Image (tube, rainbow, N blue to C red; front, side):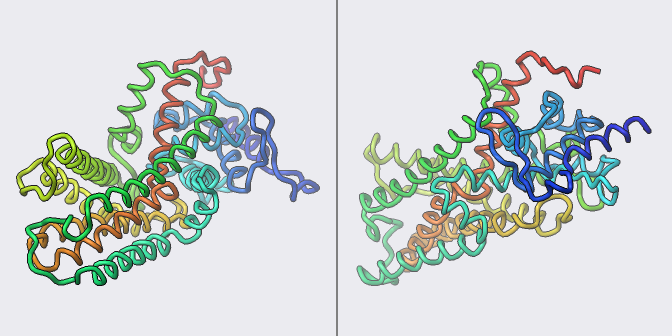
Length: 401
């Protein structure tokens, strides 16, 4: 134990600049060399200490990936930060966690670096910075503004209250108008996410991906493997108890979103391939998929919001809470307004419900590249890099003993 303390103190000293250089940025050398920010320097310090200890190697992929490195540059930290699922297991197991003088807090250090990746890889960068500072306010303001615009459009063209239209949305907004609006918004979101993911992938230099590596990374991402704490019992609460609810609520959210997306895709096939335009009966595939997805998007985000409100401050980064809650709020509003539209589509209020729902959905897609949705893209990329890296020779063999 005394030898371990000595090694950890040496690692601690690596992250402490000399007094004369206290104001100088820490730099690393290699491809795309760049100065480390304060949060990145802290994450590098924590990783140096963890590399000396290695008690948590079995918890998640971050720690075996860490042992393949002796120094931690910007790209390494971005990779490890997005590989971290913030389960909190290492914080509760760490003998150097606060209030120890080393103050090792891997989940918090990684969360702060992850927040930087959302901004640094965002396209355009200005929108990433704006969302980082005002995530909740920007999400709600965008949704309210777009919904109000569409409501006013409906008022000017036909009135908010009307005779029942048997669920015919195209009597309110023509099909081509909806396709143009949402095609443009969705195309922008995919372009921005694609550019950010390509930049991240280029910087972490993953190497060639084999079929086995792709399959393993996809399985780990879809199962949220590393939200089980490395032992299958789940994340830690503030009282140190284990729970799998964070993993379950993430599954409700992800698969609810995918079911809604599938409903839109199937409806598109019905329209263009089968020549059957909307509206569709309740027992049709598009409506059943959308209903199941909407219910999932109510349960999952509501649960994640509850966990976000009660989680201990040491188990994450408090500065990210507005951004987290902004994304959760948009998911909740999307599902709630969508289910309300389904329930009221045969009433005279359909035009109003449709305008509000479409405004919220547009706001969700416009903000996707800049908030918590982006973390799913970068995390999947990090999982793929780890699946590639673990199949490559470990020339360092720092964890071989």
